[in-house]
Image (cartoon, rainbow, N blue to C red; front, side, top):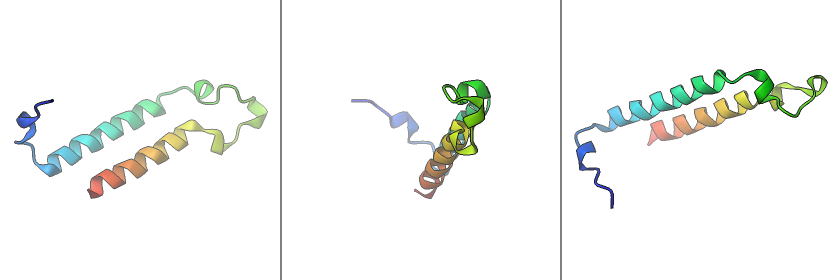
Length: 71
């Protein structure tokens, strides 16, 4: 199995902050996606805010971050 004894010196709060910063990094990378890629396959006249995959991914990341930060 994997040996993670080297992580025993990291506090729980530090681990939470590391994961939270990783979520922020993923969120920034999502924001950098071009709109044409996000709305791929949807004609310009049929694009609505709920079709924006950036909003959905930010929502999921926010929910996961809140849940992980609580535990």
